[in-house]
Length: 163
Image (cartoon, rainbow, N blue to C red; front, side, top):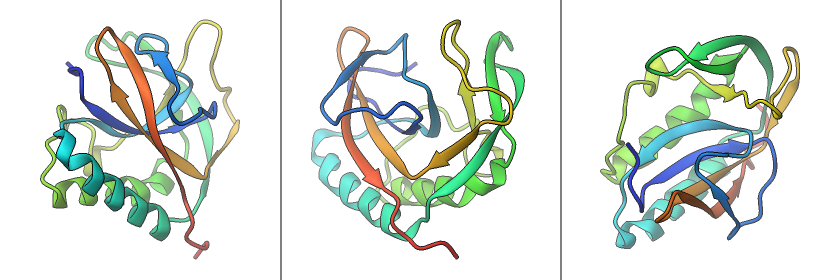
């Protein structure tokens, strides 16, 4: 379970302003690129520097929303998988390598590395549709604050040219 101070790296399908807040139980539509991780305050600057380097080396990617699946421990959370999950693997791996170099522990490593399963959680009134094109051109660093509030700490634009 994420704790106040935990950080997550995501792509937001609904753009957010750096410094803005949202309720942890009502996330904007997003794709998790790295799960919750622990970083002391003095590790935030090296983390941000590493994330800048990742953004400079990774190109934007376009993926397609896939079929509705059930995720979670009880398989009770409806999501749309990403049809071309492998297209996000290089970005995920670069982010994973960056946090490992900084020796930042992740709270759950079940779906990292080869087990990475990108998806978009479906909410009653907000979701993507099968076949929607999703343009992954940035990622955000999100911090869990006290009281189940999340804050957008930073946005990183993917800058590398397409291969």
